[in-house]
Length: 275
Image (cartoon, rainbow, N blue to C red; front, side, top):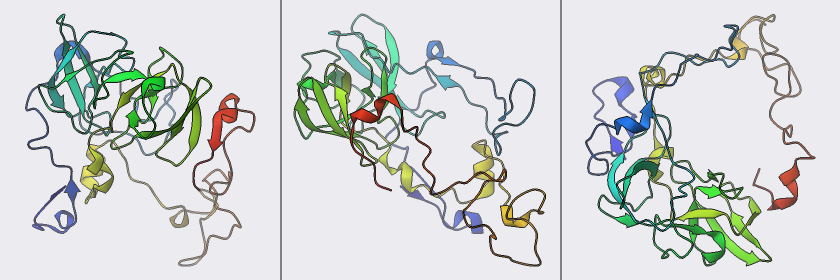
């Protein structure tokens, strides 16, 4: 983690991940990037539906291969790069037949390493294989929920899931949240932990850095008028005035369960995540 000299008040507590010596100093691979439209939280009528979004630095979207379904063809790590659209680093790989693609970078990936996506792949960080072939106790990331649909679990910086058990066609996985759930053991997962584990320790430090990330200012509800927020109004600093915390539209937030009780995948959850 990189710290800065306190040359200004905003610099005093600012931190950022260490990129030097970790990332390759190259431009992104042109064939695998595209520009995404920036709607600043507005819908097709131009009305703001998600607040506090807009502005920010220009950025290009890297097309990531989450399926990694090119089996039994060894690939070499060509570069490890920064991705402005996600917290983890990404790796540009080149297969033995010359095809290139971006994948999520593993914590221990180095340029020049070889990885393999195969049902019989070696138990090595970065390799991808079915859950049934991964022994109990191993860490995995980019885990599929439906076979062939691509990884959806454990994809953010520093996250991983742990294999707890193998039984009757299902694998028990413990996720970063503490939830334990069953996943079909034919689904693929990559071995190891996602890169950039220091991301959770970042201190943004100043408002301008937040604006560069596309985040606009947030006004406290208690600073508003009564017509604008349930917490608004009053002389001076007033308490909330409502029994439960509420949004600006009066909807209860905090302490209310939002997950659908009839969701089809509830039956696969063995242990719920910690509150």
